[in-house]
Length: 529
RNA sequence: GGGCCGCUAGCUCAGCAGGUAGAGCAACGCCCUUUUAAGGCGUGGGUCAUUGGUUCGAAUCCAAUGCGGCUCACCA
Image 1 (tube, rainbow, N blue to C red):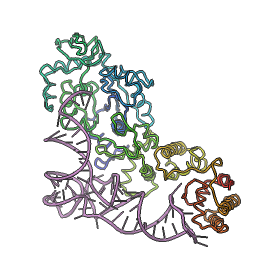
Image 2 (image 1 turned 90 degrees about the horizontal axis):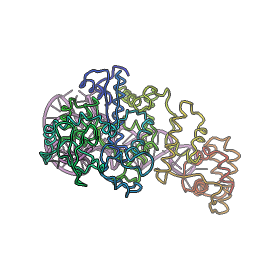
Image 3 (image 1 turned 180 degrees about the vertical axis):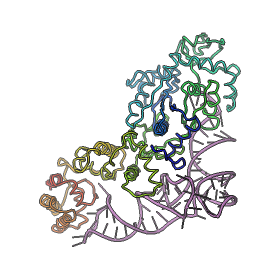
Image 4 (image 1 turned 120 degrees about the horizontal axis):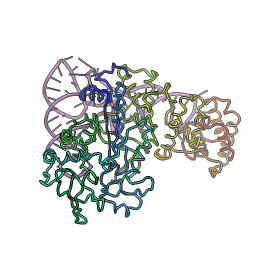
């Protein structure tokens, strides 16, 4: 990355990197953080936070900085609600109020409920070039890593209460403690802390069993800090320099506000932050989440967008405004936008210098491997065209690649991915008008009048005898001839031809379409007439 | 009640280092010497929500208003 990145015109990730360096001091290394409670599907909105950090991390690294990118799985949180559509809800219900790592995975994909959600994310992030260092909070709490933090919170209980009360409608009670305890009898957090001995002893009551117990937080790791205390404690613990947040956290009176004060109690400082907005979905056709709304995760998005384009969606959008990820016809435009960006990067398209600089940076940041930007543009066939080719070849990616003929070795991999996405899009999301398939010889032939049948038969003969030696335009003469010789209006003949070939009354311009399909296929379909 | 975001062409949005508005789709027109468009080329279309301010100049900065939406004030 050159040093002449202008502060003003630069990409937001570069601006953020500069700001971190400015506010945190010019250090050799920085820590950037993100995290979430894996209490359900980690959806594409959650992914926005991850990629936001990734982009800032890349910007810092390109400035010669060492960067630690940590991702906290807050898996010592409580299982609050049984998500819809989970197998065996009756069993899960028994685990409510226990830490999510103690909840069984009724889908039997991982050791526990939380882990199942974590694994899905950890498996897919490398596909978009993101490699955080994962921190597991349940494991950290249980191995007593945070004993000191918990003790510090207890010591400053009044101070913390005062900070939290600033934004509360109802102040915390006098006997409030900045900790919560999982019962050692039931593992549930239906407990009330009764006292602290000023050292490491905490006395609590199990409210379900009405039993009282005193534990030593050094040996019985059942104590956990509530979110608004846990978050700043971890900032201090890891020395976090940058961590973005959703607007639920970064609003006045939200947890960032209180945490930046609480963190000082732990001897730390608040990270530089930035707010990202939520992601909407468009044209998904009714996938329903546990909370009742549409939801998509990174897997869903990667089905129809190539990894670079998934990154591109986020790279090119300011984080602090909402945008929609489209599964409808907008997909075609997104692919074209990306191809334009690529053309600009490779100097194949003339644009103003200012725009060129901007698009180039977007292209760089969209690539999976920041140290290995492709040396040539991808095979830029329009998405729509690929969709049609795939439908001719019934989704066979290899046949489409072979039919194109001029794909370079450097383009093949990317093209295959793109074709796979195109096929997924057609089969799952494309509008009906968009879809068709070539008739099969096993299909019932279309019922026709004799002269219509004869016209198709003539057409078959012309295809067999002349298609390969004619230009598209020359061949269209034969189409008109087949109609005229059998007393058919052109419009009627086109209609029956489309019906015979693709089962629809209309289709792509016929001569070109027949040529793309190739002699053999057309002849075999028409041979039944 | 506090905070934030959005309001730009019929639709979806870009433009926001201030210098007389852009894209895609839709519409309309033309084209491949004959009625097929899922192809190509082209055209039209916006007092940039309103009002005021700063400025030589504002969609862009500031302030207020309206409408739409999110979020905090429980928990995480």
